[in-house]
Image (cartoon, rainbow, N blue to C red; front, side, top):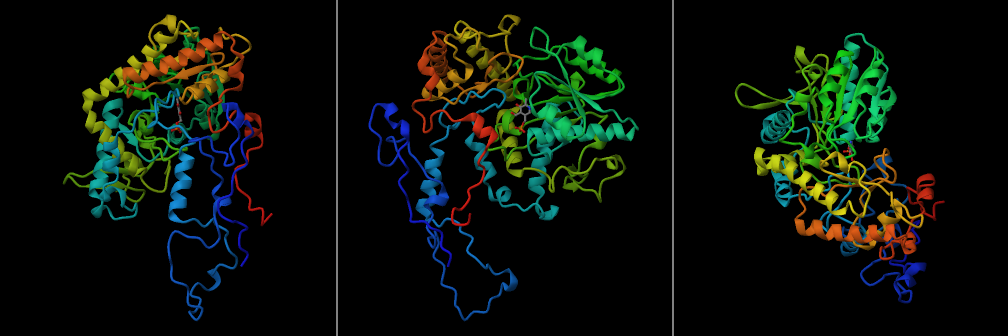
Length: 523
Ligand SMILES: Cc1ncc(COP(=O)(O)O)c(C=O)c1O
């Protein structure tokens, strides 16, 4: 057998910077509890497994026929404790919301209540198969329906597509509905306008859907320049995509005026609702003239984030776009039962649906968690979520504006995130240096260099789930690094000192990413 050349755990070469902690390099590469961990492929041993299976009887006929494996697949063999330890050790090299405040702006890294997890793990939800007949999945369909009703009520919009699996996927869903509506009226508009403060996914989505993207400048207040937008509207503009509250952490006060002007010009309004947590229960986007808006359940409604998924990005639609929304959706029948409206059962009203976003009806695990969160807060509680998110961000903003430049702070309170710039840093220090210094303080850095409209931007979103004590701890840490940055403290250029890895070569990581492990025995 072509056994992989593995011999169990191999000591990792001591990291060259171990001495940076003041101690000698260690033979394992570990720095006490700062553990090193090789790739799983480097620790697996051929033939090792977590389960004892009986030896196959060589006399047994080969029942797999042509599908029988011809060569070993060289997967790493590990026992159960080795596997558990491998992943646990890896997890300790990362930061998590369960370790502390996670200030990534625009990402809403809030606590994921354990009640959500308990409900999502109920076998009736967790063990469901998407192809199970509707007669056996009434409870699950009721969850999807009830969550959909809440989202429609909270946004003041008449229809919702539950299937998109992330915010960006929701954007694509909204833009495809816009395109279907324009196509249905024989209007081949080519351009989508995005403010220059837009989240990168907005122009990316528009381009992916085949549109030309044009920028709209921000005004001195950090909001969309209404006059510039109005001047650009014309018969070639299909839609505008605006984030509200925007990526500078500000409410777009002109939104209704913008929406009216866009509609008058025959175009449609897409709202990026990723920041809905700042206004939920306070503002209904439907009242502002929105035609389509995604909601990131993994932000506003506290379902977990994780490596780009599993997320959920339902999209709410106006009357104008509802007929073009994707299938399937859950309908409540007169007898109180639920069923999935699919292509075969869609009536006249949904004949114009642009199609499907996904094979099935969406992320059941996210739906159960989001509905649990909504029901455990109630309408009043959700309003308080928004108020506390805004209060916490303003507390951070006002506590740090004497040491960090806050470009739009004079214009009034922020919404759910506080924006700072690198203005005032000494010794050629940058936002990146400050962010790396924050790692040494035991915090994940805030979002950096976004939004692009602010030089060296630092976007801090504390979320409503942080207590005053944890905000104060974070503020003290950030204050101390900010003071060092202002004083031009050269040592920040080498930070982090106390992380499993020091500075990475970010250019090489972006230009020459190594995304797959190659078995040296096979290459
Ligand atoms: C403003 C904004 N829009 C869109 C997105 C994309 O959402 P998702 O990551 O769920 O695809 C994000 C994500 O951070 C965001 O902050």
